[in-house]
Image (cartoon, rainbow, N blue to C red):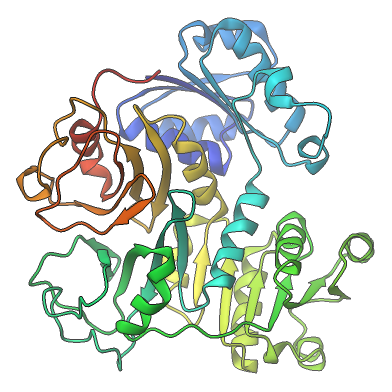
Length: 450
């Protein structure tokens, strides 16, 4: 597959890295000489200096042969224009990062149809929606849904008093249907087998039918707490979108915003959110505003250092759960070792939203998990593929993959080894990145979709 990426910022670099590791033909268009040099020194890809609004630059990048074009610069209009031009050249799939919500809220005009954009991605909205899912599931470190919400994946931390501690996967209570698709221990991901043992501090990814998930969690010693109050540090796009979503859940919401004009603007637009103008790193302000009584504190400013510092301060004030946004992905493993509960990367969340457009076959969705960039693939098993009409125990799965759930019609099935995959089953598979091509070959038939 040939992919053109416009813009080598955080999202563009991540996508270029992922695609090049999978041996795709990747070309990046970037105007900054510094960013260009970083790409050339780090990745085995072609880099072209220039603007994506130039016909000659696009042609030099090979736009006539491109299967997909990702426009992820900081400039919305340039991204949209590049997609429109690429469509005229015959590029099959175009993706544009668009941050200005005015473009997304046009009621009588479809940018997708007008400009030939297959996917409009807004990183701030993607991040806000992801955090809102965690707020609904506060016992979890991460939450994702599949099959139109019928199946749920939650990441949970095993506490010392958990009934799972010291037990093997075989010994765990299985009176309700669920699958533990992975264990993360000391920054390493394990796809568990029957004799693998659980330890305090392990992170597990648990998959079950959404209607069963609360009872499954109780079965394994995890209990959901009611969320009454959320404090958001940062009234930028992410904080504002998050407040909009949470207002529908009848939760008491506070936003702390340092910029007075921004604070006044969002205060006028939000209906049931208290907007506080002030510095979130001011201990006295946090104490006076009773931030310590919040059930969840979410730090989503543009400054990683402020997000980390304030998360630590409010934890000391008594906040139960802290969620910290970090734009520098490489520091996340270090931050997870200090007293911050949940750390997330907008660029990884955005990359996951884009990935389903660059996989082959009947891929429904892709979720990227953890430092090792494991993936949850939601796909339709194609007729004639290797796995169809076979029991799971008879399918030669790679060591780093496992079927978490299957949806057949309206029925959600947590399969065991005797379960037989049928054509057109919606299969949700956990896989480590090195095993991804093998998993695709099992369920998908034919050449690249693009």
